Length: 93
Image 1 (cartoon, rainbow, N blue to C red):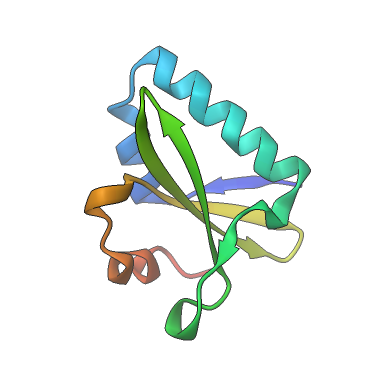
Image 2: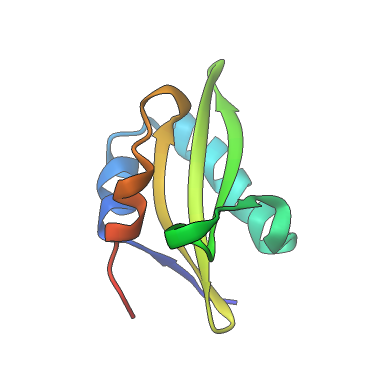
């Protein structure tokens, strides 16, 4: 299984500290082991999954989707400030 990162995901992760990146890496590994751990969105965002996790007592949402046998990490945002409309603007393959 190949893990693909969208531009917005890479940009956001660059701002994370090393400690935060380690927590994020653990969450990505968890998703790779159990791909349907997240909740699938409905409507226009069908096929996009959202996985919730905590980072320094702040809840984050990690959005991802499957592309054939691989999965793409779309976006990682704090739960309070997420605009789900932006999730569908990632690169199309």
